[in-house]
Structures are given as C-alpha cells and as structure tokens.
Image (cartoon, rainbow, N blue to C red; front, side, top):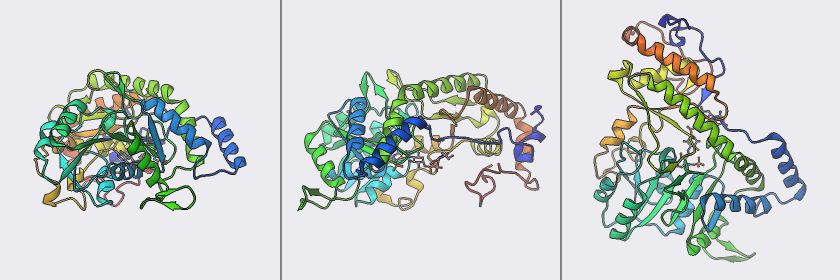
Amino acid sequence: MTGDIGELAIFSGTPLFAEPLHVGRPNLPDEDLVLERVRDVLRSGQLTNGGPNVLEFEQRVREIADTQHCIAVCNGTMALQIMARACNLQGEVIVPAMTFVATAHALEWIGLTPVFADIDAESHTLDAESVESSITPETTAILGVHLWGNPCHVLALQKIADRHGLQLLFDASHGFGCAHQGRSIGGFGVAESFSFHATKFVHSIEGGAIVTNDDDVAERCRLYRNFGITGFTRIQSAGINGKMNELTAAIGLCSIEQLESLRAVNLQNLRFYRSAFARLPGISLLEPTADFEGNGQYVVALIDETAFGVNRNHLHDILRAEGIFVRKYFEPGCHRAEPYSGNAKTLRTPLTCTDNVLGRVLQFPTGAAVSVSEICAVGELLKTIHASSATLCQQLGDSRRHLFQHPCDFIDSSHPVSEAA
Ligand code: T4K
C-alpha cells in the first residue's frame, strides 16, 4: 500500500494478506510425533475409556499446573460442568460477564444461575467489590476466569469466599502454563478447569481438564466423567460421558512438548506488537499484571477512538478486509447474551468497566502461524489508518459507498460490515 486510503481493501483495494492472519489459528504439533503416537493408539486397540495416553496427559497437566489431581475430559465446557457438580454447587454462582459465553452456559445447563459481576480495567478479571455486592443468600460459589491468562485477584476473592462461606473455583481455560507470584495457575481455589480446544496455545483439538488438590472433589470428577459407574456394574450416581479419548490425549501430549517454544513465539510476537503500538496514539496493549508469567496466547489491544481517530468497530472492519482477522472477544458480554439478557436474577451490580472494555477491546492475531514481519506490516498499516483517520471516517460514514469484506471472511457475512459509527 502506498499510503493512499483509496487502496484499502475495504474500498475494494487488494487485501494486504491474501491468506488471512487469525486469532486462534491452531498451533500444529510436530507431524511425525503425532503420526507415531496415533499409530501406536490404533495398533493398541485401546481407543477410549481409559488408556495410557490419557493417563500420561493427566500426569503432564498435573506437573505443569502443580496439582495433585488432573481429570482429563472431552472439552473445557464439560470440565466446568463436572467441576461444578463435583463441588456440589447450588443456586447462584458469581462469574464475570466478560468471558466466553461457555463459562455461563456450562452453569446454566446444569441448573445453576450465573450472576454477572464486573471486572477491573487492569486485569480484565473479577472485581472484588463487585463480587461482594452480588452475593445473596442463594450464592454458593464464585467462579473467577483468568481472562487472557491473567490471574484473578485470588487472595481478595479467597477472603470474600471465606467470609461468606462460598466455594472459590476458576475457569482457567486461557491460563495453561501461566504462573502468578511463583504459583502455577491450576492450584488456586478448590479446583480449576482448563480448555484444550484447538484455538488454545496448547491443545488436543478438543479437550479439557479439571485440576485440584482436593481428593474428594477429584474422586467425584472421575466418577461423573464416566456415567457415575465404578467397576463394571456399580452405578453410584448420575454421571455423564465426559471422557477424553486416546487420540485426543495423544495430540495433547504432542502439543505439550511445544509449550515452551510456543510461549517464546507468543512473547516475541507480543514484543513486536508492543513496539508497533508504542508509536501510535490511541492503541494500547493490555499489559500483564505484576509478578506474572504468561503464555502470550492473546494479544489484547484497547482502542481509544479520540486519540486514534477511528473507532474500534471501524478499525475491526478495515483490518478484517485486509485479512487481519482481529476479534472483538467477548462482545456482547454474557449479560447481553441469551438467555441472560434482561434477566434481573443474573445482574445485581452495574457492569461499568465490562461495558467500557467490551466497546474498546480488539484481539490481534498471534501464535506460531503469525510472523514478526507480518506484525510489522500490521503496524505500518495501522500508521496509515491513523494518519488518514479524518478522511477515512468521512468515507466510511458515506452511506453511498460500498464497503468490502475479505474473500475469506465468512463471519457475519449476513452483515457486510459492522454498523457502528
Ligand atoms: N471458558 C473460556 C474462558 C473459554 O474461552 C472457553 C473456550 C471455554 C470456557 C470453553 O472451552 P471449550 O468447551 O471450547 O473447550 C473459540 C473456541 O471455540 C473456544 O474454545 C474458545 N473458548 C473461544 C475463546 O474461542 P470461536 O467461536 O471464537 O472460534 P472460531 O471458530 O471463530 O475460531 C477462532 C479463529 O481460529 C478463527 O479465526 C478461525 C481460527 N481457526 C479455528 C479453528 C477451530 C482455525 O484456523 N482452525 C481451526 O481449526 O470460539
């Protein structure tokens, strides 16, 4: 691009990236290692219902999370449900509204009521004051989310939980391999859950796990994962099929092999985004909290429309047309999603920070599929956009002008570009 905004892909120019950059493009494990393990599984005849790969996967997760128990399951949503059941949660559970909707849905599906509390602007995790003001006699637990891998305010939440006799649990779907004040994410509260979905930096295509240091909770998780059956014929409770299979565990083990190299790639990408954004007013990175070792899985930017000159929604559309498939995670917020929207039971405090963040946040592509030179090209494009922001906004606002999408962009294809001004 020469710097002429008429050449932008949103105005029918050639996209900067013919092959789009994604948030969540799976990091692929070593192919030979995968094929070797998959072959071994197929030859063994043990495909699921317990097997050496699941056991080894559980052991590796336990080591990384530094917990006594790990129960591998078929996905992160199932991990949340089995964990909630194993902890005997009832009634209301306080969760952030700023999370993937699976956090709330997992509870809703097993008859619990998610009650949405606000986050703080520094970590995007539960705000302790908002949690405390959401407690009612029906509340039995707090389920924090280590959003973007950022650790929740675990000590403050533990104090609240202790004061009110509540259980404290964590959705650590984003936090695998992270540590807070020298302690691995996984060992906080009564139990924590991980997602090993393909979009996570370490993954098993689909998969999840519960980690805990509580022997009783672990035993119940194992029981519930396998229909509540012990032995061949003894059915002890109403369980479900939450098992991870051997092929999935084999992929997960290959992916875990790459944990440190993927972390290094992500952290390098983060450094290049940081230096690109540093030269641009109005775009800032959400920086990791102090004393935290992250996995760099998400590059989270906040857009200040006044300083940058283009609002978040327009920037989203411009970048996607260029093949930079940024995301607005987690718009619209669980409190505005069905079936929670307008349900007074699920909302007791104002979600001021959540709403503010939801309107400004943008995740940028990272992971092993994104190169440093591509990040530099994104930085240069952002410079052009900022420098021409006034003319650009005028043209975007011109309702007679046809706006274009990237040919590979199938998301929201019923709405060519977002309507926000
Ligand atoms: N709690 C939290 C806090 C979570 O973030 C999640 C899941 C859960 C609980 C539940 O865990 P799971 O039950 O899913 O294990 C994705 C994932 O599906 C979801 O697992 C994840 N969070 C969420 C943050 O992201 P979408 O709807 O955004 O995914 P999708 O299909 O748009 O993919 C994201 C991008 O990745 C796309 O640009 C395309 C690319 N991609 C994706 C896949 C799956 C590929 O290039 N190849 C692929 O195979 O939800």
